[in-house]
Length: 452
Ligand SMILES: [Zn+2]
Image 1: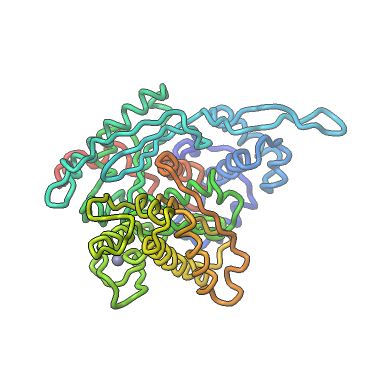
Image 2: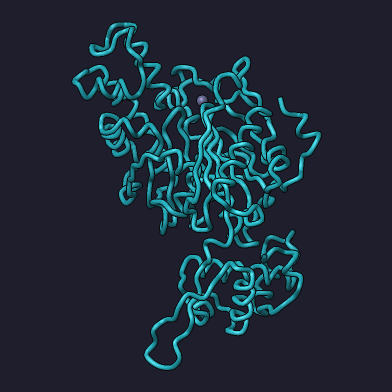
């Protein structure tokens, strides 16, 4: 492993890099040869991951490290099993150099999408490829009392599912880097605490520590839209883009950001609450208590609530009071020619488009990805969304922004949670802005007792 501890064994160090690091503004970092080596190891590992198969000479050219340093560092990564020699590069003369590739089966991670009605868990390799998948629907209404779920019950259910999916994968616990949890709401990823979950009714609930204790694995907690954004950057439509924004529409509306090639997580304690930007100050009351939030105008929940009222007024010709009113049935009614159903979908789409225009006017990203179960509404909603985006963006801003619509299934969300762990593993020590994880074993006793 290339942890800070192991790095202290010593080894070569690039003098130029050390001088650069001395001037690094992150003055809390103790700049020494061991830290420098950890940075260089990370640099080589990431080059192998992103550009492999790659020769040692090419790594030296791209990184600016000396050939001797690259040779030593790659030997260390090969000894650790993270990198392997996979072939040769054709050259016009001389002995062809051996190429290096990431050994994606060297380590594994677990990702869990945590929802009130169900849990979905995956085990993935270092390339975020799913090797095992399971879901649990035990988290039913029985877990809730007075609109609030028992965190102890939820944590227990997550632990059972994670153990089960690991067993099914056949992966040795020693080869697991950790568990990532994706949860809707305001999440403090620095402490593994859920600050606010509208769906579970939680405030300031510590989830990562008790789960780490139960599993004996490091646990990372992240907002679900952020984890999906990291997944898009890793293996989705966001690959290769320097700036993109993911906007999700479902029971809520949220956003995640990649800016200048880096995932943007704010201060680590919540970001991207697009759904709670006020768009109509005198509008309906949102679940957050404020009025006229985008979410109360544009989410699936808002659409269904508006459709139910319209049904009560007898306005929807193809749905009556005996009908189940869901996004699906409203879309079916629209497809069958129900004009009021079409208007409801169009209104909701237009509000979404207003939200997208805000993003474009603020950030002008190269790519906008609209995802979530809400995109299943199709063109009745997405056509007006695009029109409103066009109408509300400022001048040339957004003219070069590519718009992609995709319906991210539960497995994609769970893979996103797995990618939270992977992104920490591959992150340069220079960019580790938050504690690596809530370590296994933290929070025994007192944290367990604090659960509501
Ligand atoms: Zn709100």
